Image 1 (cartoon, rainbow, N blue to C red):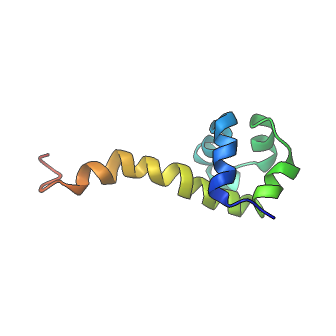
Image 2 (cartoon, one colour):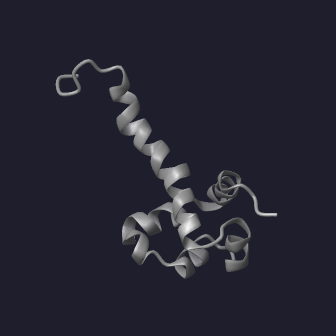
Length: 88
């Protein structure tokens, strides 16, 4: 049984979140290399495919679990209580 993507990403992030997020942000999704992620994360393709159906599933998990929370923390959360984001 596949682990939920959130749990799988948590496991991978504990070892190294860098390969999971920076490969896609640095090279774009189309340019992101699953082989490079596997090598940089010091894991195997089998381990990746145990948790994710493929590169697309991994990409969605990275957006949901890494990029989206960072975006919220940096942008959305500070603006949530703002009355005027230009002057605040």
